[in-house]
Image 1 (cartoon, helix red, strand yellow):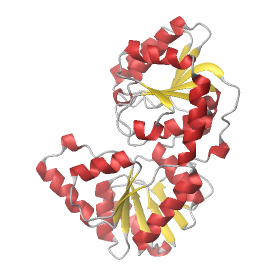
Image 2 (cartoon, helix red, strand yellow; image 1 turned 135 degrees about the vertical axis):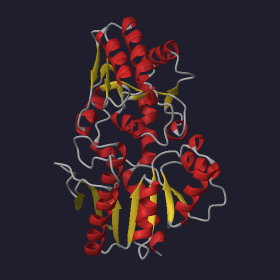
Image 3 (cartoon, one colour; image 1 turned 60 degrees about the vertical axis):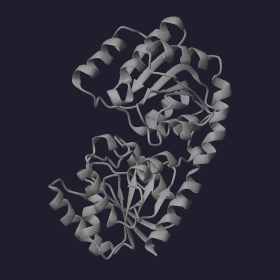
Image 4 (tube, one colour; image 1 turned 30 degrees about the horizontal axis):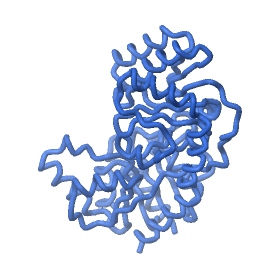
Length: 346
C-alpha cells in the first residue's frame, strides 16, 4: 500500500528544527509496513531513511499544483494530511479519487468558534475518510464539539523507540525545561521557579531549551530571570539529538504547558530516565499517568515545592517512567497506524 504523508506549512521535516509533529511523522514512517512518501516544505537537510519530496515556496494554490504533480507520479492509495483541517479539505476536494485522512495533533479551539465556523468545520470534515487523534482526551474533546459527525475517528498515540535512548546514563543534578519560550508553555513561571529552586539547591543547575516564539517582551522577561541566576541557562534552539542528550543527563524534566493534546516531551523524558514534574492540563494526565508529580497550579511557589519534592523521589519516578513508556512503543503505535491506513483505504 502506498501512503502519501503531507505536511502543511510551518513544519520542518529535518533534524535541525523539527517540531514534535515532524518527529512523530518521521519515526512512524520509518516503522511503517507501507510504502510512505513524505511531502514537506523545502529545507536544506531533510530527515534521511524515507523518501521525501519537497515543495518550493509559494501560495497555497502553487503548492497544491506541485502536490498534484507528485500525486500523479506516486499514485498513492491513501493521502494523510497532518494537522491542518483546511488543507485536508482542499486536498480531499482536489484528489477525490484518493481517500484522505486528517491526523490531528492538537485540540480544536472551540472557544474561538462561532456557530458559523463550527458549521464550516463540520462541512470540511465531511469530505474526509476519517480523523486520527494522538490521545483519547483529544478525540473526546473533538466529539463533544462535533457530535453525530458521521466519520470514523481513531486514536493512535505518538510512539518512541526507547532502544535509542539511554535511560541509565549517569545523571547530573539538573532540571530541564524543553518547550517553546512563550506564554502557552509558561516558560516565565518555569524560569522563575527554577531560579528560586536553585537558590535553595546550590549543587543543582537548570536549563530552558526551545525556540523564542512568544512576544518579544515575554521572551525578554524570561531572559532577565535567566541572567539573574548563574546556574540557570537559556538556549534558543538545539537539534533534536542534542536535546535528547540533555534529557538523558538531567534528573528532572519540567513541563508547564497550558494544555497538551499528547506531549512528546513527557514520553521522551521517560525514555531518558528523567523524572517528570508537570501541569495536569489537557491530555497530560492521560499521557503521564502515575509516572510524574502534577502541579496543582502554576504559582511559582508551587512549582518550586514540586521540584523540591521530586529531588527526594527522582529514582522512584524515573522507574515509573521507564514502565510507562512501554505504552508508547514505536513498533506498537506504528502497527496501529498501519491498521488505520488499511481500514481507510478499504
